[in-house]
Length: 117
Image 1 (cartoon, rainbow, N blue to C red):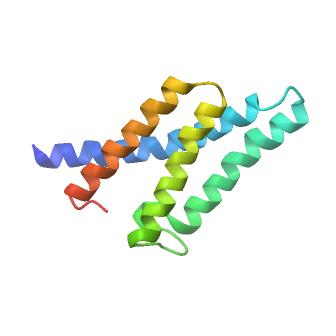
Image 2 (image 1 turned 120 degrees about the vertical axis):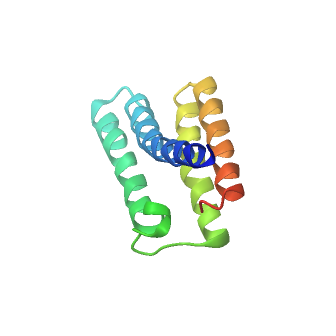
Image 3 (image 1 turned 90 degrees about the horizontal axis):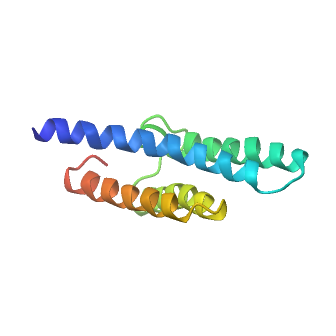
């Protein structure tokens, strides 16, 4: 049973990662009435987040170019997932932002307890 719960928690982490990219993209397309700015922010924002994750956090660090561990990894995750929640909030979606942040906190606590980090 615990193995199933750990698998569900790992899947939640993956979907949260995708949620960050979607949140930043959504924010980008709502940031301005100007279509050029919408395209730049809506495509460029997620591209920057993806680049940062690929460089420092992908695959729990195993697939990252410059893997981070310990406090540096914790800071990366807080900035990454916090950025996703903040993007939702900035796009006037306060409730989804709060739910996203809460899911991240639950996921992070369970990963620490279950030694999935």
